[in-house]
Amino acid sequence: MNLYNPHKMENFLLFFTQNIFFFLLLISLVLALIFYEGKKGGNRVDNIEATRIINKENGLVLDFRSAEEFSQGHLVNAINIPLVNVSEQINTLSKEKTIPLLLVCKTGAISKKAGIELKKLGYLKTNILSGGMISWYNSGLPFIK
Image (tube, rainbow, N blue to C red; front, side):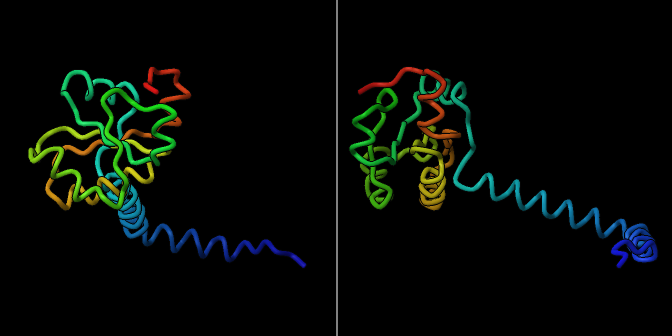
């Protein structure tokens, strides 16, 4: 039984060349969707950019990990907030919608959810620590216990 059929391959290549515009359009749309979904919740920032936001822009650091994880080590001046209370507690912390926010969790996934919520509330500068505290610890950067 021969699985390779040269006529099918020729038909596919003919179809591809006749519809190359649509293939390129499809690829472009998929890439745009991936980029858009990646931006939801805020800009992903690495450890160096996070340090700059904290030191140069006086960013507000919000840590969404559990109280136990937070007590084991957190960024300087970080505020521990459970994700369920983010909309209530952010208003007590800052009414200024243009303040830079650095969102931190264990891996970055919870921060994305929090960022989506904060953007709905009108906060304009939400930044997510890419890789979360795991990345921070693995880089050997300082933290407070």
